Image (cartoon, rainbow, N blue to C red):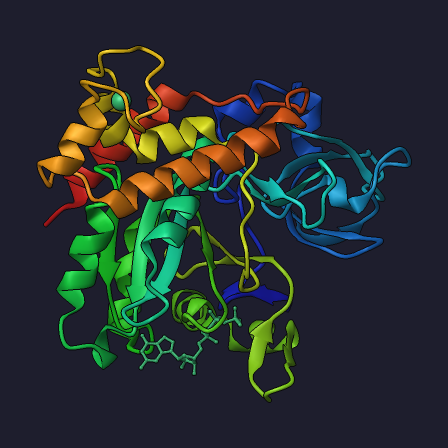
Length: 352
Ligand SMILES: Nc1nc2c(ncn2[C@@H]2O[C@H](COP(=O)(O)OP(=O)(O)OP(=O)(O)O)[C@@H](O)[C@H]2O)c(=O)[nH]1
Ligand SMILES: [Zn+2]
């Protein structure tokens, strides 16, 4: 029997697969038996899961497989040979592709929670976390910071505090990913048709977490290759069934994340500075040398660190540069305010 994780691929309902009224609203009743969720993408084929099990299908003749993302919902042709159309995702994780072009690269679609994975060691980097947080918030995903290797560190709570200080929207957890019971702290975010994606640098423990949550050792080895140093490394994105009834997307380690069109996310992550800026004397204050600048005053009073101000400026500059060439790019249909409210609610609801 084909399996994803430790779950036999039979008897999934559309709801098990993550279907929701958002997708139903884009379909006729006739479409329902042709709906499928994308689990993996190859150069010339797309792997999907239907209520009847897994299938390998082709992209439509006028599209490439790169137009689809892992986690996407699609409608198949009636013969189930190829994809007829992509349903508009409810969240869309994308980044600016490497190089100087304006293209964006799809990372994953229909992700409810973006687990930003870092470690309680030198990998922990505020600027990088803020960048990933801006991506999560711009994409409409709930951000969760997962700090692995807590067992190798004297004071993991200090890392949690530093992560949560970055934004009131952040929930952070420190854990030892190699201990199954600790990895299971992520269970609330990957049950009942929910989808979580793991994003972070190479070696932070994404695959370790993924294995613990899906028990999919065999599947994982199949998509791994040895790198030059003989380590195993994840090379493709794939959607796995978790042991808790939801879905998990493991992604290859990211070296650099270039944001695109992320001003909403940056604004949300740096809400403290945006709030201060509203009290500057000049509405177009650049917070450089202006008199009565509320931002510079906060730095002077020690309420805002100069480092955080610099990081905010740098991200804004980068986003302005990237977005100038992207202004015609398609903006996904997201309800930003609703996501921010649900992030706060989720955070307060789960805090123990
Ligand atoms: N002690 C300890 N070791 C960990 C922890 N998390 C991961 N490791 C170890 O760190 C190494 C890298 O973990 P992986 O899960 O392969 O990292 P990854 O993020 O999937 O890396 P890529 O696939 O390259 O993106 C492995 O040897 C893990 O056993 C942890 O919380 N504690
Ligand atoms: Zn100012």
